[in-house]
Image 1: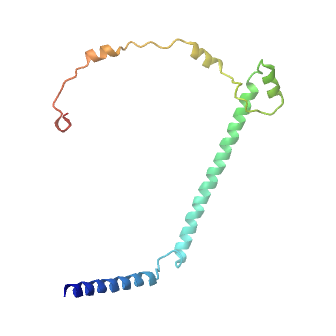
Image 2: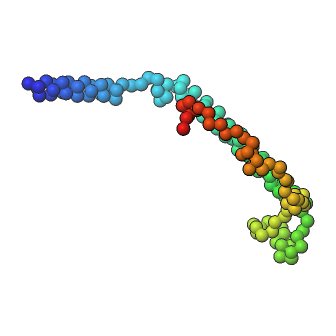
Image 3: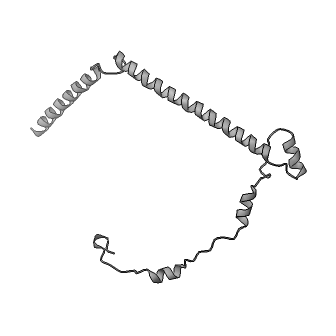
Length: 143
C-alpha cells in the first residue's frame, strides 16, 4: 500500500513539474529586448554612449602618446653626444636603436647618489627599553 501511495505522489509531482516546465518554455516574454522597440532604442543609446566614451578615451590616449613622443625627442635632442664612437655612430644614423648599454644619467641624480646617507638617532635597543610591555587582560583577545 505504501508503494502505491509513493508512486502516485511521485507521478503527480512529475506531471505537475512537466506542466510548469512546458509553461515556462512556451511563455512569451513581452518585456524582452527582442519584442520591445522601446527597449531596443534604449539599448542602442546605451551602446552608442559607451562607444563615444571609448572613442574619446582613444583620442586622449593618442594625444598623450604624441606628447610623450615629442618629450622623448626633446630630451634626446638636448642630451649631449656620447664620447663613445660606437654610440656616436648609433645616434648619428638618425635611427633610434634599442641598445640598452647606453645610459644617460642626470647630473643631479649623480650628486644625490654620491651624498652620504642621512643619519638616524633612533636605536631599536633603546626603543624596547623605553616602551612598556604591560600584559593587560585582553578580554576576547586574551592569549
